[in-house]
Length: 467
Ligand code: GLC
Image (cartoon, rainbow, N blue to C red; front, side, top):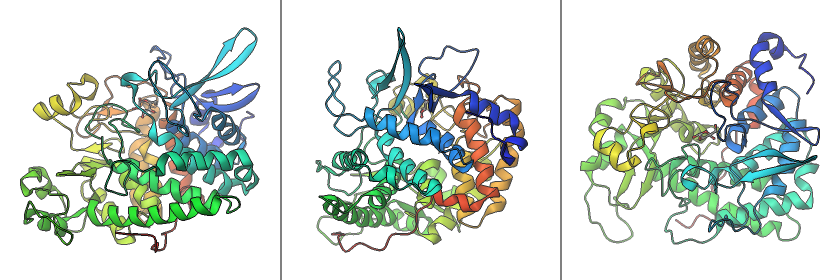
């Protein structure tokens, strides 16, 4: 692509140059960005374009007035959507979007090759890909005003196929989505199976996006109705049962167990003994957050940044809750931002818990990688959430913390240690979403009107909610 003449390019030519170098082409057209460009490490699958990684780059391109690559990405990846596949006893459900893809040269021919998780370490299913795809399609429409793309019949069919996959009846009692471990950014065993917050929030935002993008013609209205009723139930469920603040904690502390019937306080049979010791001291009076997971007899009290920040952006968290989440960041700055924004989850699993829950995963030792590492990509979500809640000073502080080090350290993938002081043990350098995350964060702060690409208004309570 032609180098940008825009203000950001002038301000941050190095970051822009790196971002542009990460772009790859298919039949002469830019279609995606590689995950990392580390000259010192074997690429493994980091030479591929991951859907979730591309979101940061795509937002930057959209904000810069360069939507072509995002459009090409949406068009080409739609063609990859799973219809019927069977690979090595691995069968991605119809509608699933791949985790990543790359261009392979077969003689003179170029072929796009997708990975649905059948090559991924531990064969994890990329459930978040189809959700990010919908969110990105909506962002593209908001940025360009081009409503025609999503209205094309193949796009309408693709949206419906995703909804078929996400809304199918499963053996689950809740409106949340039941998923296996490692189904999103944390794509390793980390005790994030069942109903992890991040998937629920992405599910919520992507359903709102689908509702905006679907035409009522044909059976579109039917899909819109189904989405409406699920959205209402999901919002009710997450707001009522995932939320933790001091008052809620006090209630859980005095819960009775073994309650049977409809009108009970302790619906999920959570025992007070399950409240971790760190939490009672850690939670400030004016702070709160959405729990990491909720299932039968199980509340994961860990704080997960992406789910909470995206809950603010999608208005799944109420305005008051959003303020409380930002208060928590302000109050626990050292823990959640530290020397490199943002801590992916807090606290880390240690000792026996680490052994049991991660299966002794050395890459996910305490305070490393997914297990309490700090990830620069999360900076754009933090900046956008701070801007949305009127807490711009927090975003500015976080950007100031990140900027100098990121450039100096060559944009690592993640940082280690309780406060994120060390470059991640196995982190790649020149990680594209770390580069794009910093540029996007600055863009959101300087041009708050761009927030519309990734924020959602509060939905009205749906009459379809049957809870
Ligand atoms: C790691 C991360 C995953 C990311 C991929 C490429 O596997 O866990 O979230 O998409 O690297 O950067």
